[in-house]
Length: 232
Image 1 (cartoon, rainbow, N blue to C red):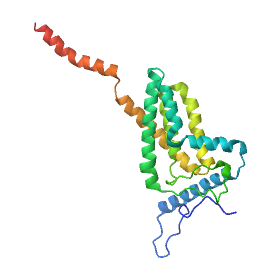
Image 2: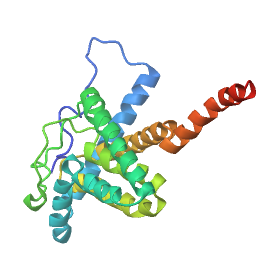
Image 3: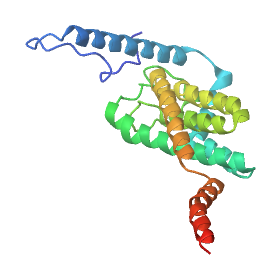
Image 4: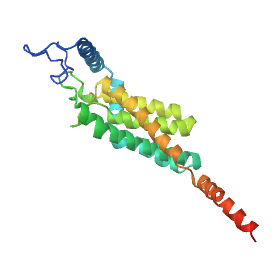
């Protein structure tokens, strides 16, 4: 059976007969990218061809539940009911989701425009199917948002790092298992998620808390108060 996962858009195209040959580095880059696409397609095909009837329904439901970051927002709402630290973790986590979602959907997908996998040609069993998105395949927005939330919350609230990291990993894999993403899309989404969490954490660190702001205001006014008192 031919490789069902490499579409016409993904396949390397030959040079025009009348064109100049690519430079040495250009040829090397094209060859490396071609090899990576081949590995990506082979991994996708291997997952599609592996019977996992026990996991199919669970991962399908997980993938669906992760639409629009519903799981992460639910966890954030629960954390917001806790103390000051959980509330801060929830706020930073939601901020990380916003950065990851915008980066994936407004930048990554529009720049790369990779076609979605051919799920029917790969014979992905119907028991795994979720709705095939109409957006570009690269990177995985579900993975980017889940990893961004898990990373940001885990830094602020370390006990949550392992369970949220495991959940984000499961969400990422579910997108491959259900046939809507190549493994490379998910890997790129994970990298984007980590970067988005770092950006959200940096923004939160640059914004002083209300208590710190009050102390800074008092410190700035202290010299003026002292000078005024000394003149009386």
